[in-house]
Length: 222
Ligand code: URA
Ligand code: SF4
Image (cartoon, rainbow, N blue to C red):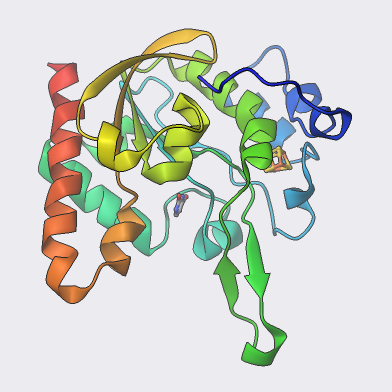
């Protein structure tokens, strides 16, 4: 959990809470999230990228935030990282079609260098933005009620397990955690984009590590 601290008035002002409907399924959540102004990230992004997949899934995957492709298409993990993820899931014995995938933050955060054209460069969300977006993740967890939650990368880990989370220390084991008031079995691993970013020489090892961690999640399912 995030260590207790006293929020300032301006931090209080960043939250998705008032936008989250009290009832309804995935369609109602997605519709409401499309109009979320819970933090400033909605301003520059194309659209809200809400979670997607099987709401009866036993595995709920949490990434960081939508990437460039996801921002354009409105669905999570449709870009290069998503292809790595699907392949790794499959290899670990988890059918990607039987998962629910979402992100800690639902809007794409990026910077643009006008001198270098239109390319949008991913920027990591702040703790404040992750906290603001938390009520959407809480609603997704309550809806899907997964048997295991897989966090992909440092941001997702921090969003669920608190700011002291470290991937290298906590990956690949089943953690029992209080996540938004629910006791969840959580397996942390690296982000699939870390495989894509790895040097050629390290890529196969990074990918194998991702698969191994996902196998730990698969074992929870029995
Ligand atoms: N990376 C993420 O963390 N999430 C996506 O949806 C796509 C890429
Ligand atoms: Fe709302 Fe989350 Fe988007 Fe911020 S990032 S505007 S909290 S959906």
